[in-house]
Amino acid sequence: MSKYLVFGHKNPDTDTIASAIAMSFFLERQGYDAEPVALGTPNEETEFALNYFNVEAPRVVTTVANEVEHVALVDHNEPQQSVDDLADVTVDYVIDHHRIAGFETAQPLYYRAEPIGCTATVLLKMFKEHDYDIPKSIAGLMLSAIISDTLLFKSPTCTNQDESAARELAKIAEVDLEKYGLELLKAGTNLSTKTIDELLTLDAKSFDMNGRKVRIAQVNAIGFEEMQAQKAELLTAMDASGYDLFVLIVTDILESNSFGLVSGDDFTQVEAAFGTTVIDNELLLPGVVSRKKQVVPQLTAAYEK
Amino acid sequence: MSKYLVFGHKNPDTDTIASAIAMSFFLERQGYDAEPVALGTPNEETEFALNYFNVEAPRVVTTVANEVEHVALVDHNEPQQSVDDLADVTVDYVIDHHRIAGFETAQPLYYRAEPIGCTATVLLKMFKEHDYDIPKSIAGLMLSAIISDTLLFKSPTCTNQDESAARELAKIAEVDLEKYGLELLKAGTNLSTKTIDELLTLDAKSFDMNGRKVRIAQVNAIGFEEMQAQKAELLTAMDASGYDLFVLIVTDILESNSFGLVSGDDFTQVEAAFGTTVIDNELLLPGVVSRKKQVVPQLTAAYEK
Image (cartoon, rainbow over all chains, first blue to last red):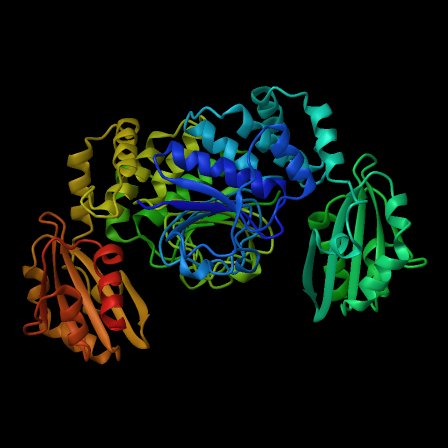
């Protein structure tokens, strides 16, 4: 068997990087040659976790078929989120926690997805099923993935399984879960070093909603002041982007609230989705932390009315 | 949570029926209301297993959205093999051992597939991971599924995992694996009661191979005499079917050999695929027992030359 490259989605987040490293270790434990790689450089939150547990960042690649015939995907399956030459390799493994869309194989494969908060939680089950010990550093990264994806268990995507997996991993990683968790999340809120363009693309996804082009970006923050100070520049860039609706969700990770900055033509739909009024392009979103569960479905429904 | 219907593919085989029953039991153990159903009546092999372990055949349905909102699929994922109104329900679970093609969801789900011989082997792992005891009758059906899908471990699709799962299930089911296995396989070779049309449709799959319409049917037998006696009628029906190539694979389950009956225009590709000559529409296929591994890939490659 030739070597596996193991990777997550483009614009990698902590779960994508951590799960690539953990899955690569899992495959090596099964006797395969495997290397975690990434489709982009780690963000500051992920960098914090890598430094904390003294793990090197995975090598960044833009293609894989020039190196290997077989790959393992983590934290994604949709081709447009994956490596550009995915069609030229064989996917033997997928470990994920998203919907399945546009994913096809010619051969049977190992596919393991669960509707839970984090890919690393699925990976922890696999390690336990095989009685594989998890090294301290990899447990630390998997823990970081769960903290990141669930905003320290505050996201509605979080399940009891994610929380108990995190507590188990924190023991192996020998860290204080709450203390480390807040430090990790804060590391991802260092917005002062980011350009306007970076803030709007760091974690942005595009959607087709009833024929309208919608883009929803999200950034984590501590308080809203820093982002509100840049409101004018942000709106100028959002207006210039050409979407029918561009929503920037700024999530306060300590208070578990968000506010939205809105640009484009479709304010009616936004107001219908959240039952509130857009004032000066701003929108209060109390209790909202998850784009996947608390923004996309509500907006989609509003467009379909 | 409303009720789940659990079902396998159209033209149900023993794995599809047994895994629907086992998965339904699994979901009930998890506290859900679940019922196994089938997209067709069980074949004679499956009937033998159901009678042996005193389990009622699942109710046959042609639609599901009129009954439930949520379903669990076993032993398949491709929509054309599934219930006609699959698009009108939400798939929350898939337990499978095939390639993934044309399958899409709007929401995250539990998807568990492995590249092994039988869905029931995957299900046994799930039962063990949850420490759920398996009732004797369900263990017997799961064992039957593995025997059926692997032709008592002789198929190249069989893995060590399937064989050890079968041995474990045989203990729970309190049967002599080899003795019961042969009886079960023999029950599926009762061809004398079948019409020509039934023989050609019981387990037939269509393929597009480089733009040519190819159909490959397979029947299990003991010896080839019974089928060879009906050669003329079989060929007449195969000729009338309008495929560019129609191959009937007759597999001797005791000798692990097959012979092929060939109709249509594309004999060149058949001869290239198997490195042998078609004489009087017949083809010897020594050692061939698996359509998935020993017929389809070879024919596909021959068409692409």
